[in-house]
Image (cartoon, rainbow, N blue to C red):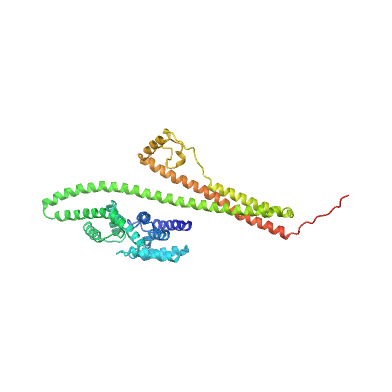
Length: 420
């Protein structure tokens, strides 16, 4: 993916995240930032499977970020129109290609119920939007959607009504991509059977008082089991969301690091060419025109310093590559960074990784440290890169001023003294 596309995706993520965090009502329990992030992740999974062209990939991810942004208007009804307006303004402000804008608006429109995708990109977005129907998260996500309808949309929906609505929806829903049909359809059917089983239990409950008592007891036990299951599912969902956040952060930092390296390489190449030309051309002129020595020194110094700071921005730092058992037991070593283990033997590294993977707190701590130190490295890269660009900009201005002064001022003459 090109640098411009990576920056556009990063800006879209930041823009939409800010909308959800600051402008979307907190009673929006389902169509929130976590849902949007899960749709983006599902889109990435499907895009990789279908090997989408770079342009279609960009359109898909931008559409995924914006498809529910319309909830920031305060209304669920017609949120697709608001989402399209927000995406349109964002892309126009970023001077996006008109063909991208048209495809993005078409993708978002395709998610309106009933879904109506016209091509593979739109089919992927529609399937990603309802990805949870065929996962173990269905029960929890479904509960959050009902809470949202009650709290945000002010709809009075009983559990019985909600169950019937979901049974009807699942029976009529079809995934558009063959990938989702293979992977998600079996789990979706299992979720549907679970709802139907509860519906049947509800019907039998009305037959006799004795049956009601028995079912009440079963229901109480089922509620307890459901509570335990819900707690377990919540923990698993939290872990998945944390993993998604770490994955997105790592991807963003990788893109920013690549952008910094590319900018540094540009500065090194440009200044190397300038120095080659200056040394080759002005080197000869200095013999006949000594006044050129001052602007030459200025522009050569500018080029050299710019190259030095550009190299500092890209120069890697590697640590000792060793750790001790005490470091692992005290959770001091981050095993996710190669610089901390590349000098260790495979058995020692295998033992250390097993220790970390068996300790969830240690694992999360390592992931946090990894992201933190990546951020520290990025800050150093961009600090040196900024210095390099400042030197190049101001040095070039000063050099041109000196050149102008040399050519405007009269050249000093030479007095000839005859010899004896």
